[in-house]
Length: 159
Image (cartoon, rainbow, N blue to C red; front, side, top):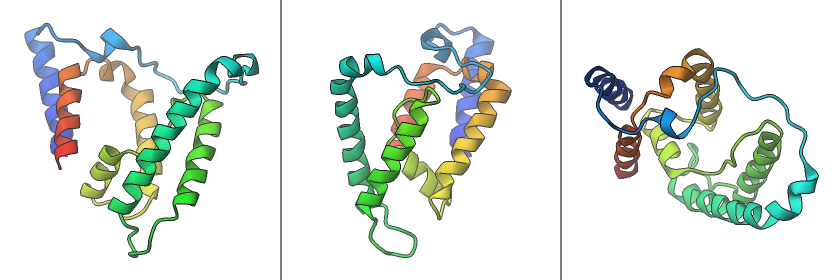
């Protein structure tokens, strides 16, 4: 909760003081709606295959690095093959809805565990919560200062 309070407080301070810092809206627009279904354009596949393989390898390496550092709640070993399959399914399905590639994230996993997450459903719940936030206050998220995001990443990474 402290990270959220810090983000809101600094965002309000920047807005009130009209500080000259880069905001999220300076680099991206956050629409007030969720993306719709988008049929794949297979003619672009040959030009994208090299980049797609590179992104997939990085994402798989991250997932493989996280699994041993965050054991399952019951103490059993993670099924790396199952993790890789799930990541592949998520990326294929997400690609149909204009999502960015997804993968394992030490910072996201660390935040979830430190917040008290006990199961993998924490990712699903946080994704649903993020969808509601985008729908309800996407335009407010555009006012978050970029240094705040950088600071939050450093704090989460240091935990």
